[in-house]
Length: 325
Length: 312
Image (tube, rainbow over all chains, first blue to last red; front, side, top):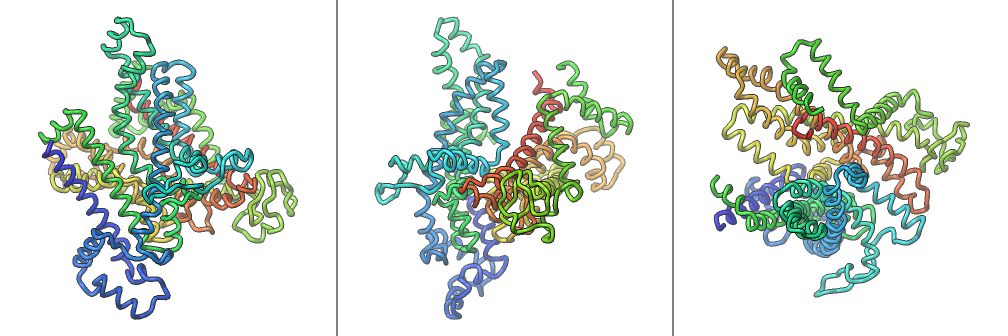
């Protein structure tokens, strides 16, 4: 297990390093980094200071080293728009996005598992077929367009849900959370549902395949022979077995969910870090763009690492095959 | 149906070696099998209508939305069914600059489909070449290529595209480059997989015995035999490419305002949505959904036809 752990952490570090290199090359090495990092109205003295701080007179690999060294210390430059360190700007927006992603994840699981298991239990019934055909629609619909349609119906025509914003927040240990207030939750319904839709489809597909496979196995036949009620067979024996792949895939998809908040937050004017990224791209606020990319990579890599480790703890076969290779 | 599938699949594999007439016949047969699926048949019909009408846009569209002499600002934001100042009827309404939405959608579909298809074509050529080279040269080249592929596929494509476009700026060519950069890895992985199977077959050994140059074995013998699985993946990925392009354009980093794709049209309509003027956003969105759903329906059926294991 230790070997496995070390190997995985090492791999995660390589990914982080590769992404940092890519971002460095994209933002610093291509074009003039001074233009990218300073606002156009900066004075000559400020320019000189930045050139010295970034070590632009040094060879490229030394510059990359300096960039990494500063990044590790949390110094990724100062945002032009907000006038404070880019990492601080991002950290202020992070809770909103994480909250949204977690609520979306819960939506996906609560909607996806019952529908998927039902479709798997009755694959030839009308309901089962309708769910599976509907799931094709689920991943064919562009995320942002669904958001617009929801706004049109629930906010513009019916006036039952707010069209955007985050609503009221409460401060918990200095972190602003919206999921603890009624107003915040109401503001979260549409964005979270839009974000969850694609994952609902995924959960339905996994559960359907999983249920069909589990239902044909001997232990289900045995449970039936033992006289267990169908409800108990489904909820205890089938769902439990189906949950393992669902949890794994959901863990891996968490990073993708964070990435897609960029779209959903733009549609619903939700003040998270995805909206921040788009605003920063429009305003050419490069320090914030760099910080966003590195932070998302970090979240992504950590989520994958946690899933891998959990999975290895749950399923010894993976551990062994990894160690053998 | 289950009994004829393996034969058909075996036929597909033998396709490159078969004489031209037979392969044409086979193609027709596969096409009819595609249409047997009800969903796929609907998909083919919808997609054909969309593709043909967008290609014919300059001739069938009520007006040219780029030609400023044909549009009048006085016609702006008219609801569907209104009469334009030129006397024509705007069946889908007009946008904020007085353009007829139907014409804008026809021209926008052209751009969306074009960007999708071109980027998939380039990405599959690039990916296939890299993938087959990896499998052929093996060892270190293969390991390095596959590591890069794994790394890239573990990342959400929208993030990679956003990074690239935030550096490049807007433009149709730049969107295509970003889409290629995002997609090539899928094709590299697929082609490498089939190349590893093909490389052990007798015809490669025979080519080696004839001492043919390596590039010739690679491109003339190995690559053509890895193409069939690539076609299926490419078809399905056109939908993904179109969706990604529209998302990027919606976010304002994709195509320029002067060449609006469907995503861009939806984005401009977003500002008017709040006041209930739905048509500027909703109709281009419907066109986009129709394209993507029909490609996915066809893709689903293709997967079933070309993979006998999926037919139970």
